Structures are given as structure tokens and as C-alpha cells.
Image (cartoon, rainbow, N blue to C red; front, side, top):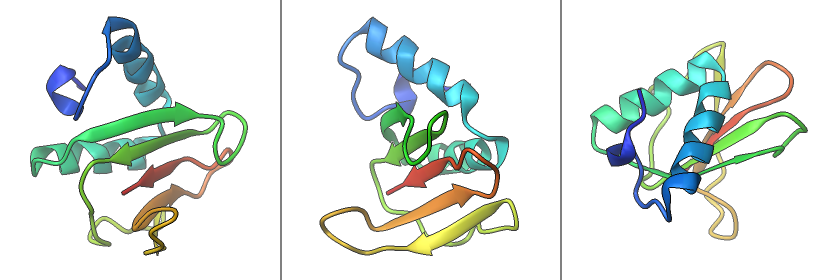
Length: 101
């Protein structure tokens, strides 16, 4: 589902495989939002784990997104703090997963 073209930059093959593996663990509602954002031309900037909770996955998108994907399974929050990020979607499950822009 996620190819090298899905990412804004990839340092090396190992980095690409790590991010792909983490994306496979992202909860489905957020994974669907990532796929929709990729369709509209956005890119994945970074993928990490264990934030905000142990066992969670967080994905940072290159471009900003809005609340159009908000649902009972993907909660939207506007942060708009230049020290952190503009907005995020979070899962309602534990551990909480994040999609950040």
C-alpha cells in the first residue's frame, strides 16, 4: 500500500522498511486517512513509535490537513502551535495512535 513515492524523503532502504513496518501497525481508521491524504498529493514525512503511548504509532504528514475525515474512530484536534504541530487525528483505542501535520 505504501511505496517509496508515499514518503517525502527516505534516507535509505533500512529507513524505508522500518517506516513501512510501523505503518502496518497503524490503526485502520488512521491508515485510511493516510491513504486518502496520499491520494490528494500529501506525503509521509516521518513515522515513529511509542509516542504518545508505549506501543503506539505516530505519523507526520508533510502538508496540513483539515477535519474532513473526523469520525467516532478518528478524533480531530486543532493544535496550531508552531512549537508542536498544526492538527492531528488520534485513535480512540489504547495505545493511542496519532496522525500529525
